[in-house]
Length: 297
Length: 224
View 1 (cartoon, each protein chain N blue to C red):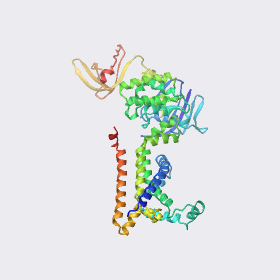
View 2: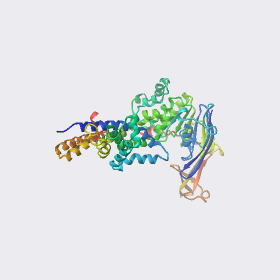
View 3: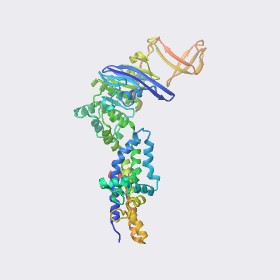
View 4: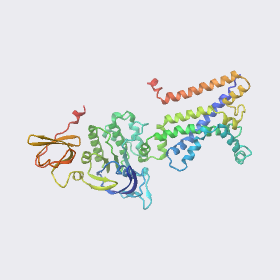
C-alpha cells in the first residue's frame, strides 16, 4: 500500500492554487490521475519522485517513509525506487537504446533484466540505435523499458502517449498493460483521454483546481450514474430546418454532426447555439469497430 | 633570424592555460547554469569582466597583488616558493583569469540548453549528481566543450597586454610570440615580425576553422 498526502502552493496561469491531495494506491493496481491541464497532476508526480519539494506532506511506500515534512524526512530522488516516464521521454541522446537501459542498472544487478525487457518491448532490432533515429512510439517504448530496469516500487507515467497517433497509442497501451501485469507493478498514470483511462486503469482520481473531486472505478465515474443505461451526449445546435411537418435539428457533438427529428413543440424554446443533450433510451445502439489500419494507410 | 622560442612558449602557455581552465570551468559553469543563489549574478559578472576590461587593468592589479612587496606576494614567495611576477606561473595565472569567460560561457550555455528532464531522468534512475555530470551531461555538450577549449586556446595565443604587464619580456621565460612581434617591430625587423605574425594568423585560422567544421557537421560528409 502506498499512501500519498501532499500540500503545495503552486503558481498557475490564473494566480495561486493550493494543491491539496490525499490518496492511496493499491499494490499491483494501475491508477490514473485525470484532469485538465494545470490542475497539478505533473506537480504531484514530481513531488512523489522527489524532484519538487512539498510544503507539507507524507509519502509512505510499503511501510517505508519517503517524505514526512513533520519529521523532516525527505529522501532524495536517488533513494526512492521510482520508474518515471517523462512526457518528452528524456532519453539520453549520447547513448544507444541498449546503453540507455544499461545506464539504469543498479550496482551488482543482474543484467538479464535488460534482455528480458528488450524482448517484451520488442526493441531487439533497434538496440544499437541512438534516440534521434527512433520514432515517437519507439522512444516511448525505450523510456518505458528504461524505467522498468530497477523494478520500481511505483511506475509514474506522465501522459506517456499524448504525442502519438491513435494506432500507436492503442499498441503502446497494450505494452504498458503487459509490463504492468508481468512485473506486478503499482502504476500511476496521467491521462487526458477518457477512453484510455477506462481501458487501462483499475482506479481513477479526478482532479480539479488541485483537489480530488471524485475517485473510483473509471466506468462508474465517467458514465452518468443518475440515469442508468441511457445513451446520451451533449452538443450544440448548429441548424434548425423545417421539413414538411417536422423539424430537422443539426447538433454538433465534439466533431460529429448529428441530425435529430423534432416536433414543433419540442423546438419551441430551442435556438441555434443552445447547448443540448441528445439522449435516447428506447433503442439499442449498434457498435461499429473503427478500423484504424484502413484509416491511416 | 627568427627565434622559435617565443612561438613554442606561446603554445606551451596556451596548452597549460586551456588544461587548467577546463578543470576550473566545468564545475564553475555547472554551478552557474544550475544555481539559484543570490550571489550568482556577482560571480557571473566577475567571470565576464575580462571581456570588457582593458587587459592592462587586470595585469596591473595582478602586479600589485603579487608583487614581492605585497603581503600575499611575499607570503607566497617565502612559504611556497612561488613567484608570479615575471615568471611563467604568473603568465599562466593571468591567462587563466583573462580567458575564463571564453571557456565558461560556451560550457554554461551548453548546460543551460540541455533539457532539465535529462538530468532528472538520471536522478530518478538512482544516479548521483557526479555520475550524471560525467556520463550524461558532459557527453551531450561536446560541441560546447570543444568551442570552449578552442576559444580559450586561441584567445591565450592572442594575449598581449596582460602578459606584458605581469610577465614582462624575458626571453625563454615570458617572451611570448605577441610580445616578440612588438619587439621586432620596435627594432625595425619587419621581416621577422612578419614571420611571427603570419604563423600566428595561420594557426589561429586553422584552429577556428576546425571548430566550425566539426560543430557544423561538415566533416561527417567525408567520413561517410
